[in-house]
Image (cartoon, rainbow, N blue to C red):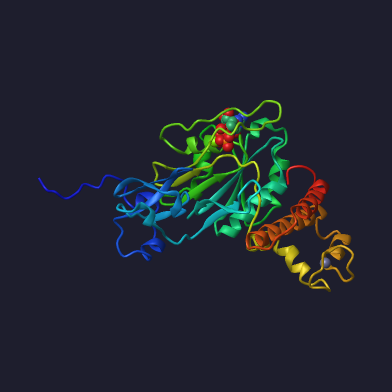
Length: 343
Ligand SMILES: Nc1nc2c(ncn2[C@@H]2O[C@H](COP(=O)(O)OP(=O)(O)OP(=O)(O)O)[C@@H](O)[C@H]2O)c(=O)[nH]1
Ligand SMILES: [Mg+2]
Ligand SMILES: [Zn+2]
């Protein structure tokens, strides 16, 4: 009998290891990937088996951690090639990391009353900021009389973002999402509760079923069935993160993502006469001129301004600038009211 320890866990490639991470560590035997996050800490897997990473390490789902078995709080998180984050919900101004080292974000929406372009733009901006690829997935086409109109609206969001419509329950997800779910790739499903994120993960995997629940009949709202973020390994070697439905998605530190998503408007705004033009009453405003000529869409301009204002506020407040909550609430609510619900 040899006394070489038998590796108990998955190999690093099984978990999506890449050269980017190999370059950061001399020795890989203690590398683990965070598969699940709870309040009490994170559950991580690696060649050494399954370990618990304490909250103080600040690891999120998808992170690679060099685990210290003697002093777990001494474990270190490797640099991330992408990070999906938002402003934490509630009164505080903290940033919440949602998932790290993600290649593709599937922004999931349903062909029901839940569908909302302003909300999709938020998810897309956050994804572009993170340095990941965004794909919009429209589920429940069977519940809509006019999916084509919703698809067309989704396509106007960005020419960098693919739009896929599918029934999440059947075999369609495997074929239609295959090009983003190759071996070693990490993908995450984001979106409101009840849109079918867990149903999609089940459709892609052979493993045990994740709980799903019908949305409420009356308003198609979900019941917040998934309660924590968890990464699943697919038989083909892809890694898929299921997340709980988000009630509120507030942007923070997303100027870069917004600049990409609204590149046309930002370029136009750069030609306004005044550098700090608010595109309201100022003379020589290129945005107002383009609106008057019908070259750009007024609703989209409004949505862009809402997101830029919100991002600026959240980013400044996180970096120490004290704003009057009332001032902020009024400004943002005002704009939202003009846009209609859901933004
Ligand atoms: N008709 C129809 N129902 C669907 C489709 N996709 C998902 N569903 C149903 O929608 C309900 C909600 O699906 P879930 O997968 O639990 O939704 P979720 O996004 O994971 O929701 P949370 O975990 O609460 O965030 C389930 O009853 C699914 O069967 C679809 O394409 N068509
Ligand atoms: Mg779910
Ligand atoms: Zn202007």
